[in-house]
Amino acid sequence: MIKVAIIGATGIVGQQAIVTLTNHPWFQITKLAASARSARKTYGEALREANGASRWWCPEELPASVAQLPVENAADFDPTTVDLIFSTLDAGVAKELEPKWAQTTPVVSTASAFRYEDDTPILIGGVNMDHAALIKVQQERRGWKGFVVPKSNCTIAGLVVSLKPILDNFGVKQVIMTSLQAMSGAGRTPGLSAMDMTENVVPYIPGEEPKVETEPQKILGTFTGEGITHAPFGITATCTRVPVLDGHLVAVFVQTEKPCTPEAAKEAMVNFGKDFCQLGLPSAPDQLIAVTDDPFRPQPRMDRDRGDGMTVTVGRLRQDPVLENGLKYVCLSHNTKLGAAKGAIQTAEYLVKYYLKWV
Image (cartoon, rainbow, N blue to C red):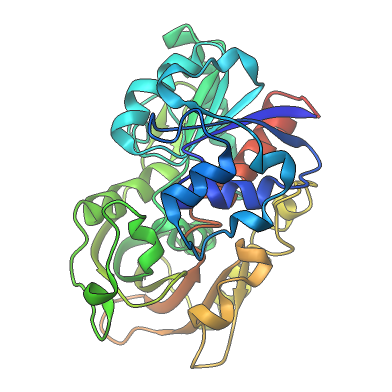
């Protein structure tokens, strides 16, 4: 078994990582770390203290092997005690600590700290796995034996997966999108209170729109051997927070380079990613995109767990009457599974099998 550490284990994404890694066929959780406040407690104790009666995880239901693990101080963590690190830290702390760990140990991160570095790929399962070759460039430039590979922003996971087959088959000129993002995406600190969200929509998420308007071009770009040439199309975004627990819904308007009917787009989406889904990765779904003809779907409560949270659901696929070669649709992805912890674990599975060749 591959020994792994989860850093930031008491947060929402850290808890989701534990859910996914419990009974994982390749990975065994042997180390947990968090802030100094949680250090020197067992994980069960730290979780009760951090989250109280959390809906995310009931400490009594934790596997004993995990509940009794001591929580270490992330700032003092020794990366050589494990084979692989899952970092779910905030960006500021990740920027400081992840390079220290990467000197010896591979780090797969949900933080944004290294997403915009020229030698760092942002991998999304089935979309741009060829970008994994950039890791070698990173290791050579920085003198690391390990590496840092970050996940994308959780909002764009569904967007990028749904755009990739359109880009490959019809080209993309521009994208206009509005997100309706779940409350869990705000995390616990600062998080959102019930008073914030009851009978309410918050029309602004600080720092979100610049990420949504830049990351897809890197993810959908072309690996050149030394770096990534970004995809040339532009994105304009409005990001909102809605009173939904899990599941980010995105309304997408795409102008394609070549004419694209809704029927042709549906066929491209349904057929997309079959090779990836057959690679034998434990966290991969049976299909990357499911397309529904029901005009009232996708809905977060009904569709976010499709493919155990790893399948993007697309609906309301139709011609746009204003944009030339315009297409519009709604897509839904699970923000704390595909968009965060489980997506990071799927990335690690790919790297372990096809880059590190450990299995």
